[in-house]
Image (tube, rainbow over all chains, first blue to last red; front, side, top):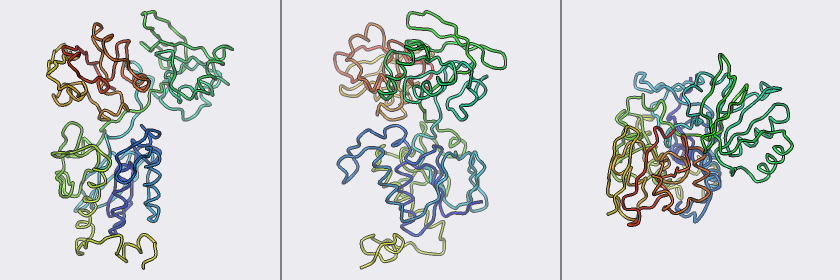
Length: 339
Length: 106
């Protein structure tokens, strides 16, 4: 059981800066994120897209912003649990008991939800039938490529993941690559490689086709694909892989007894506390009158939620406001020299 | 104000007035049209404001850019007349635009 003053759910920009604010005022915290890397939407959705509205930063990409935030919290060693989704949050005495899908548990007076639009999950094939084969012959990520050796694998998608795996698996499997249009959005070098492998017969390319049906008994046996002109092809295959990126889902947050309005969590604007004492929501996931879904708003919300955490984490102490420019205590925490 | 017509998957029709300059997605969200999730808030980063534009109207819309086409790869059951509603900006020319909302966004 991990005991901490505050647990932050979400390692996006808001979660990271909230951690900074907590450590600055002398509280400890840990961060959990469902993704396998730090940065949230900034890293997952737009690492290369420029952002122009971070105060005092005229232009930076999602990746640069994330790296700067990571640097900013470097002085504090903050424990981060990546690739874990918080499934359970329940009251235990005066505190909150939190459990992840991997079984990691926490006991904390404060839970700060900085979860963006929820957790990222892979987008799946539209056909309901696919569920039956999921994790047996249908996958949305590759954990062990050995299982595909000598088999027929049908890969769907037009981005880097689909193309990279098509190239990689074509070395030891029979690969079909199916995409809804002629253009691929992956790196040009990989696109060229795929076309080259298609020419030499190493990859069977089906463009302008989409999956319409799957069939098989226990395991997948064949798939049916259809093109824009409604022509249908049936292809024998052992596996189907779908790479359609990630989708954000509110997920278990909906089950924690919080007031939820249109997939956002309702908070007050003094502490950014939810209807549950000691549970806060900051960043894109919170809502209140006038809420703007901007990164800068998330920073403000996190700073205030961090101060609110102080009361529950240190009930016998009084929080004293200090500036980083002048406080010796804060400078000691940051590990920088005082004047 | 231009009128935008949404046909939802349950065969209901919603007609709303949308101010010039707003996107079709923003009009839908402000008017609580069911079936437009718009998770990323208009950043062309999620494909959850996906619509099928009425065939007659599809040709009249400004062309989609590459980024939109890339995102549509990830949409739920994309078709030839698929668009992201966050990329359609409402103007007087689009008065009467008809869009159909897919059964799901993800």
